[in-house]
View 1: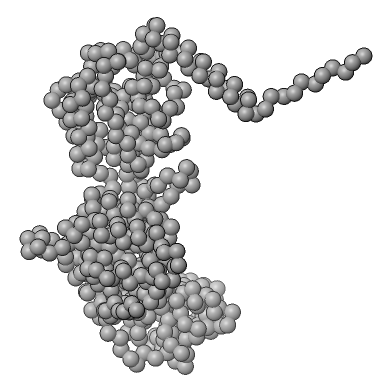
View 2: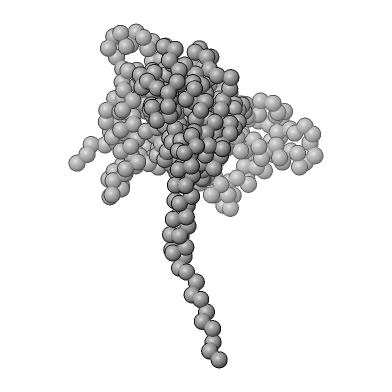
Length: 495
């Protein structure tokens, strides 16, 4: 008796080929039946509105980055408010996920039995704590600015590549579709949701698409910024002063774009100063880039020019702007940064604010030409007068029973971040001692400073921007030599 042969399973690639073939056959059959039976309900509505066959419909398409979806919606809403629209958004038959095809192709591919569906909606942020409704897939029967019938389509594609937000205009006349698109584009710029907001460019963990996040505008006042006398006024004069005289400067043939570099040790208040500028220029659009998000500088610069007056903040720019001599293979991200700063245009009311802890290794090209960096200001470690102001600032709502002069002398060479953390630890010591509310006592300060000066806290001190040891005998104790501010950008001639 012979052994029955065991069938050999088909190869996975053969199965995939068979599946693709069957899918093609089904799709072809569906299109054939559609041609025989006529258009779907959506197709009939479009033909009736445009007074032409689907084969004669002209489509004008525009694609936007996905994070512009909310602005497309706002532009369309403003257009419909001015020019009127149909009774509501019309949906399309589900099951047609073809991101490479336009909406008219999907309508032509819909089976005759497909009925009218409700439009698909989603939500999008319009502020740090506010959302709005957006159309993900839908059509609106409307009219062009000259009254010619048009169909406006919005489509957001984020589940399949390519990822985009799309605006599609259908009409029997190309001029009507183009005119509608141009007016919607204008309204998108006028009603841009990002205007006057604080934004952060980042990257989504899904599909690698760029996203824009809203941040609350910092509530930092001039009294909260502790710098040597004259430093904040110099910074404000460069950033705010130019804005106050923008029209007169342009009339005099002067440029508006400016670059500000804040440099100094970690924890001295560079970021705090930037936050003050964000509040001080409350009507400015602020775009914050830090870390790997600096690679979006070209998009951020383009958005800043579109939404001027604006501020582009690049924190820790030394991470990407290191002198090319330190990077044998050059630095493509640095080139993108320099090109973006140059490309904004001298007439744009845009301020680039850069911060760095390592001005000594920062690419000199950032300062080689006005319009990249035209003012560099050192944010130094606080001297005795500034440390006293910092102590009073961070302890302003607390009871203090200590000789602050002794605390000030014991913290020579430390940073603002160190003093802030010292106050927090002193409050904890008081609470652990059973004091409610806490009281900042001399013995509490002494205990905290002894702990923070300990060898096991050397790394913590470094992270807070403090030197290896504090105190009158420490290497950074000297407050004797006054520092002149702002210091000019260090010039290192190239060989």
